[in-house]
Amino acid sequence: MNPEDFPTPDVEVQSTTATELRGSITDGDSVTVLDARNDSDFAEWHVDGPNVEIVNVPYYEFLGEEIDEALLDRVPVGDPLVVLCAKGGASEYVAGELIAAGRDVVHLDGGMEAWARIYERTEIAGYDGPGTAYQYHRPSSGCLGYLVVSDGEAAVIDPLRSFTDRYADNAAALDAELVYALDTHVHADHVSGVRDLNETSVGVIPSEAVPRGVTYDDEVSTAADGDVFTVGDIEIKTVHTPGHTSGMTSYLVGDSLLATGDGLFVESVARPDLEEGDDGAPDAARQLYETLQERVLSLDEDVLIGGAHVSDAAEPAADGSYTAPIGRLVEEMDALTYEEDRFVETVLADMPPRPANYEKIIATNLGQQAVDDDEAFRLELGPNNCAASQGSMAGD
Picture 1 (spheres, rainbow, N blue to C red):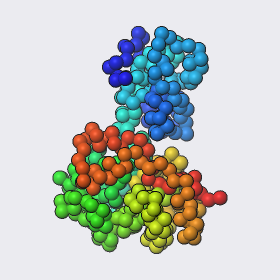
Picture 2 (cartoon, rainbow, N blue to C red):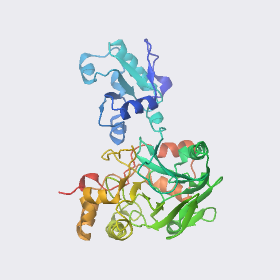
Picture 3 (spheres, rainbow, N blue to C red):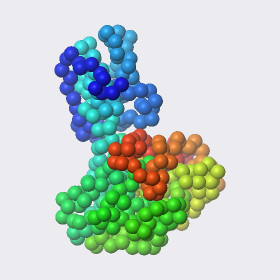
Picture 4 (tube, rainbow, N blue to C red):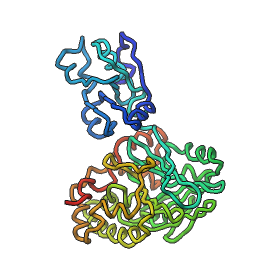
């Protein structure tokens, strides 16, 4: 049903915003949620957190004359209970029915689409290079990006098309001009903002990604292994780190932060099958092993790792960012100490589902097809699933 098709509740229904809900979760408040979407949508992605109790009861179960006791018993009690759906129409109706039944309820204005528009920026306190480094976090998908600022200039790494206005505005608020927008690779889970940002700054893609069929490499700059981009007093060094994809590239910011894209995360390593498929995944996993051992873990143990994604299994650092020094990752992630054969076996075992719409997103990011802003936003709703299974990384 469309939102306009639901009956208007007979009682007044209060709403909460996605920002307010996110604030309650990050503040550690106990949050109780009733997700009224279909079972399959809930299973694919939903609001989560260590202090979140969430139950899925589809909206259509509330359609009828009145709520019976059996259904009411399945609905958790919150203070208040937050009811949500895809866009807000169904949740307002369900909330009204529950209020009429005597429950303390609010509904999430804009639903999960509003949740997907939350995009947070955190200063990375552990960064000790020139200037200042920030991490962007999209809680709905776990997508991460980076803004580095020094001496009136700024660069963004792994920008999202849905938030392209944010980067220049944030840079301006920090008395800087956005001069570079860099992608680490051809993303499979979100639509890149590099081409849009190339209109006002210098868009950069890895030169090693071009052979995959990039159609716009003559419009943007390309980054080869060893290239350096200067942002104020910050040097951003290009490090080719294949494995997740053949063109996967990391950027070493101020010799302090390695933006690894999808090569290494704070809780896992890359999955190797999105470019080469199942048949090519073993060879890609071996390449990933070589990359990690020779190009990433060989750096100083104090260098911070910052991936392009984070999962619910990750714990934030003390500053709230999802970064961690290389030395700590080696201590905590047993897979980084394995011999090659065991590493490959571990990475290939229990591979999670591929990202939703990944083939269409890849084609969009290659420039082989075009989508408008609304379709781009909807293509990337849901989890990213660009990492190997987190459960296999910690060891025996």
